[in-house]
Image (tube, rainbow, N blue to C red; front, side, top):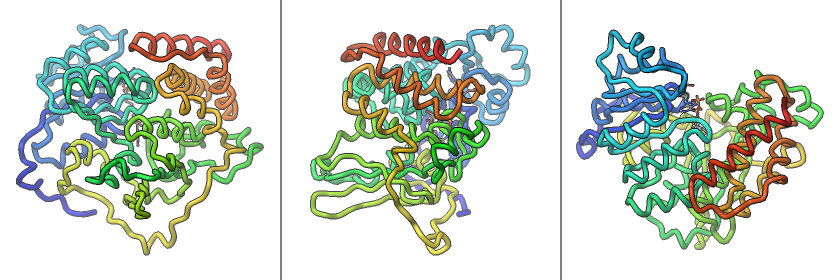
Length: 397
Ligand SMILES: NC(=O)c1ccc[n+]([C@@H]2O[C@H](COP(=O)([O-])OP(=O)(O)OC[C@H]3O[C@@H](n4cnc5c(N)ncnc54)[C@H](OP(=O)(O)O)[C@@H]3O)[C@@H](O)[C@H]2O)c1
């Protein structure tokens, strides 16, 4: 590990930040970055879905001004019984989270909420003109054009936290975006790389959650095993960077060292490399592309031996084929349907109601049975999301 040194002089202005989903994998790693910042990053708002105890432990350590538990079943009075030792203001419910984003004079919101539940928080942040460090790719998949419009109107920036998208941004750097020829993002291939369809019929949730290179929350871990995560990331890339003439491609790269490659029209290809560690892209987003010192595992190319790249086995892992319809119809409700169907199918797989291969069938059926419309407002997306969830649940119970 490299030693932590003080942030550079020009990075010592403190920044008031919110970490939404602070109890999750991204949230916890973001708090590690905060701890290294020596007061530069001030986490004034933390929020979580249901788990009060880890949120309170974070509050005791990081002293935010406010914490919010989204769980609608949790009464505020009930919450205060947990709060005797802390002076932090505590609230419950989704509305309390949006109010906090509006009221706390934030410089940046990190959205580390999992699933479509993160959408309104992304929208609220951008409408308030607050820069959004976005781990919650589901927001962009469901409502990319609306979020971009909100950002454009308020002047806020969307800073991707996903390692591939943070990498693309770094590869582009100051280059003219119109000179990009092609973008390549990488996929580890997940825990079942090399498996056959017959093998996949027997895999268990525990096996699917055991990702070879990244430690992540359960939904994204299963998405990495099915490769639906790459479909979500392709839509995310399309929304953030547009589609260059040569397209956006996915290559399987099991070592997870090269995160993205941008090929320019002059024939130069620029890649971003690093050992797999989400703190690096999180740090990059929280500091808006500046490069403060922090802990990281130095890149060890000799130790790695070789870096390999291969095409996705689409016959065995048909996620890209199934999701293509959403990719080819951006700005429609198909993104929200894809995301909601996948979220429900993953939940059904994790609870043992369906097998791994049925995730593909459920998402495909949800997309086929949906009549897409061009999205004009958030309510249409939320409606498509709800309808899809109900449908998929009716097929799995
Ligand atoms: N983990 C990674 O390495 C990684 C990498 C790239 C992108 N991402 C993206 O980052 C996001 C978070 O992933 P993760 O792996 O950190 O997930 P995670 O470990 O499951 O954490 C999810 C967080 O969201 C909170 N949450 C759950 N339901 C909520 C709701 N309805 N409203 C508000 N908050 C809710 C959880 O609170 P509780 O603890 O109370 O349940 C938890 O704090 C996802 O969009 C994922 O695709 C993750």
